[in-house]
Image (cartoon, rainbow, N blue to C red):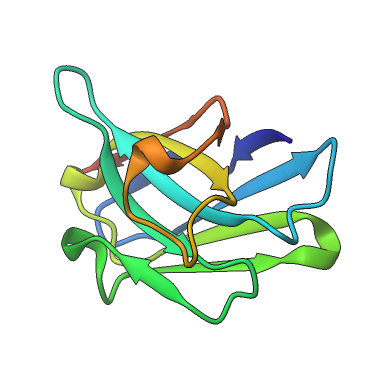
Length: 124
Protein backbone atom coordinates (compact mmCIF):
# COMPACT_ATOMS: atom_id res chain seq x y z
CA UNK A 1 0.00 0.00 0.00
CA UNK A 2 1.29 3.47 -0.90
CA UNK A 3 0.71 6.26 1.61
CA UNK A 4 0.67 9.99 0.93
CA UNK A 5 0.66 12.40 3.85
CA UNK A 6 -0.54 15.97 3.37
CA UNK A 7 -1.93 18.95 5.26
CA UNK A 8 1.19 20.22 6.93
CA UNK A 9 2.13 23.86 7.00
CA UNK A 10 3.07 26.86 9.11
CA UNK A 11 0.75 27.78 11.97
CA UNK A 12 0.97 29.97 15.05
CA UNK A 13 1.04 28.47 18.50
CA UNK A 14 -2.48 27.69 19.65
CA UNK A 15 -3.66 27.05 16.13
CA UNK A 16 -4.89 23.90 14.44
CA UNK A 17 -4.04 21.73 11.46
CA UNK A 18 -5.52 18.55 10.06
CA UNK A 19 -3.21 16.06 8.43
CA UNK A 20 -4.43 13.50 5.95
CA UNK A 21 -2.91 10.21 4.89
CA UNK A 22 -4.33 8.96 1.63
CA UNK A 23 -3.69 5.36 0.65
CA UNK A 24 -3.53 3.86 -2.80
CA UNK A 25 -2.79 0.47 -4.23
CA UNK A 26 -5.03 -1.43 -1.85
CA UNK A 27 -7.64 -0.80 0.77
CA UNK A 28 -6.48 0.28 4.22
CA UNK A 29 -9.40 -1.56 5.82
CA UNK A 30 -7.37 -4.43 7.33
CA UNK A 31 -4.48 -2.21 8.40
CA UNK A 32 -3.81 -0.61 11.73
CA UNK A 33 -2.40 2.82 11.11
CA UNK A 34 -0.34 5.40 12.91
CA UNK A 35 1.30 8.80 12.90
CA UNK A 36 4.90 9.42 13.88
CA UNK A 37 7.03 12.55 13.84
CA UNK A 38 10.71 13.37 13.71
CA UNK A 39 12.90 16.43 14.04
CA UNK A 40 16.54 16.63 12.92
CA UNK A 41 18.89 14.99 15.38
CA UNK A 42 16.13 13.28 17.32
CA UNK A 43 14.65 9.82 17.22
CA UNK A 44 11.33 9.19 15.56
CA UNK A 45 8.50 9.74 18.04
CA UNK A 46 5.17 7.98 18.23
CA UNK A 47 2.21 10.36 17.93
CA UNK A 48 -0.99 8.30 17.56
CA UNK A 49 -2.31 4.99 16.32
CA UNK A 50 -5.70 3.62 15.35
CA UNK A 51 -6.91 0.07 14.89
CA UNK A 52 -8.30 -1.18 11.60
CA UNK A 53 -11.88 -0.62 12.76
CA UNK A 54 -11.20 2.71 14.41
CA UNK A 55 -12.35 1.31 17.74
CA UNK A 56 -8.99 1.50 19.49
CA UNK A 57 -6.72 4.52 19.58
CA UNK A 58 -3.44 5.28 21.33
CA UNK A 59 -1.73 8.62 21.80
CA UNK A 60 1.73 9.69 22.81
CA UNK A 61 1.81 11.58 26.11
CA UNK A 62 2.89 14.91 24.54
CA UNK A 63 -0.24 15.05 22.35
CA UNK A 64 -2.94 13.55 24.56
CA UNK A 65 -5.96 15.79 24.80
CA UNK A 66 -4.85 17.92 21.84
CA UNK A 67 -4.63 15.55 18.87
CA UNK A 68 -7.29 13.21 17.52
CA UNK A 69 -6.65 10.35 15.11
CA UNK A 70 -9.44 9.05 12.89
CA UNK A 71 -9.93 7.11 9.70
CA UNK A 72 -12.44 6.76 6.91
CA UNK A 73 -11.99 3.34 5.35
CA UNK A 74 -14.49 4.15 2.60
CA UNK A 75 -12.24 7.04 1.52
CA UNK A 76 -9.06 5.05 2.16
CA UNK A 77 -7.80 7.89 4.29
CA UNK A 78 -6.57 8.49 7.83
CA UNK A 79 -6.54 11.84 9.61
CA UNK A 80 -4.80 13.60 12.46
CA UNK A 81 -6.60 16.63 13.88
CA UNK A 82 -4.09 18.74 15.77
CA UNK A 83 -5.39 21.46 18.08
CA UNK A 84 -3.67 23.78 20.55
CA UNK A 85 -0.43 23.38 18.66
CA UNK A 86 2.84 24.18 20.41
CA UNK A 87 6.26 25.05 18.98
CA UNK A 88 7.50 21.68 20.24
CA UNK A 89 5.05 19.99 17.84
CA UNK A 90 7.21 21.21 14.96
CA UNK A 91 8.38 18.14 13.06
CA UNK A 92 8.09 16.10 9.91
CA UNK A 93 4.98 13.95 10.34
CA UNK A 94 4.79 10.49 8.82
CA UNK A 95 1.86 8.14 8.44
CA UNK A 96 2.31 4.39 8.52
CA UNK A 97 0.36 1.16 8.21
CA UNK A 98 0.72 -2.40 9.51
CA UNK A 99 -1.37 -5.53 9.84
CA UNK A 100 0.88 -7.87 11.80
CA UNK A 101 -0.15 -6.95 15.33
CA UNK A 102 -3.38 -7.97 17.03
CA UNK A 103 -4.27 -4.38 17.87
CA UNK A 104 -2.61 -1.15 16.78
CA UNK A 105 0.86 -0.56 18.11
CA UNK A 106 3.01 2.36 19.21
CA UNK A 107 6.17 0.64 17.99
CA UNK A 108 7.51 2.09 14.78
CA UNK A 109 9.40 -1.05 13.70
CA UNK A 110 6.09 -2.94 13.55
CA UNK A 111 4.89 -0.74 10.70
CA UNK A 112 5.49 -2.02 7.18
CA UNK A 113 4.43 0.91 5.03
CA UNK A 114 5.36 4.57 5.40
CA UNK A 115 4.37 7.79 3.70
CA UNK A 116 6.86 10.44 2.67
CA UNK A 117 6.11 12.91 5.47
CA UNK A 118 4.54 16.34 5.70
CA UNK A 119 6.18 19.24 7.53
CA UNK A 120 4.42 20.94 10.42
CA UNK A 121 5.94 24.15 11.74
CA UNK A 122 4.49 25.92 14.75
CA UNK A 123 5.70 29.45 15.42
CA UNK A 124 5.72 30.98 18.89
